[in-house]
Image (cartoon, rainbow, N blue to C red):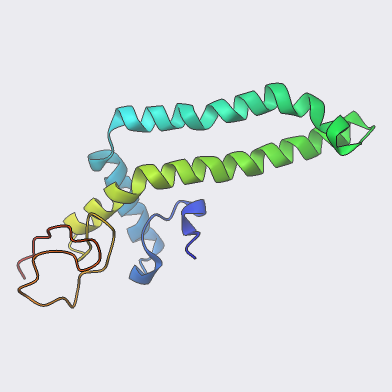
Length: 142
């Protein structure tokens, strides 16, 4: 299972891109291929659970865990909320950046399907669509 998206690596691990190339492609995907309204909407959607968690969950976490020391309960609650928030926001950004990353990789010369991310190098010259999802693909001129 590929969990590299938890660290902001939205490229498929089989491409084995170095960190500089990943960063360049991620920046290009964000700048050129990600709609600003969708980015802002997903950012807001990611922040709301964190704010609600700090407002509603954190005051009750000590009593839920049976901890009488409020400081220990607060530390545990903050840690749990940060962990859950990190996973939640990473998943949201994965859904936001996955397709733009494939488009940026395609524009950079990588043979990748923009519909599903399938690696297209090594396909026959007469192939007109992705064998994985059926998305029409244009062959790059070499």
